[in-house]
Length: 264
Image 1 (cartoon, rainbow, N blue to C red):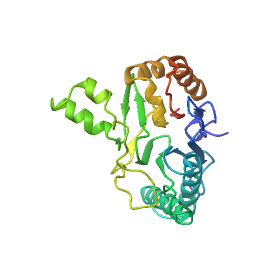
Image 2: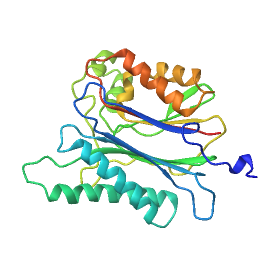
Image 3: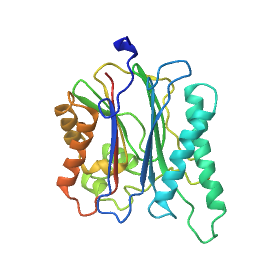
Image 4: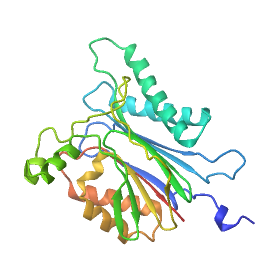
């Protein structure tokens, strides 16, 4: 009989993902879960979750996210080395794949692009690598914390608010607020976020990886939603978040992708 400590992550109960097109014409997000368990261990002891948010102003945003996510997952499984090295190699492969395809398209076409967030979660620790503004959150004991860097101008505007250079209202309505400082476009990547060491995880922790459409909910509302559903399954938490976003019914609601991993 398998001991509880070695029991695998269970789909829907411990990990799940959902998408909502919002008010957009197309769903330009793409995600994938993959079993990242090391050779010789039982299945689903470690999960890889990758989320790509295709750039709508560029050629084939939905295609770009699909290609990049699949290239990332494939490269992660094919390469050797430490987990952090494999994450970086997979990111570079995804970027190079987009560059190769963009290079074969007509010169007048805007290069294909996507953001990228990949999180590698075991029962006791997680690592990630991210480019762009797709957020990675960790919920622990009633507190929700964003773990990865925001590569949009939002972070710079919020710093200006702290310095008293602009008001909160100015920052919230700035026309360039969501402009990206970094994305996968097939060129050298301007900014990459990755922790120097794995982050410890504990029973009861909840990982949330999403595209930026989740920001229809403010931080406090998202924290309260997860707290309310923390004892339910991953699929029910994900459904509750999407239901809350649908109820807001924002007239310009972006695509939303939400992936959740609960640590048993």
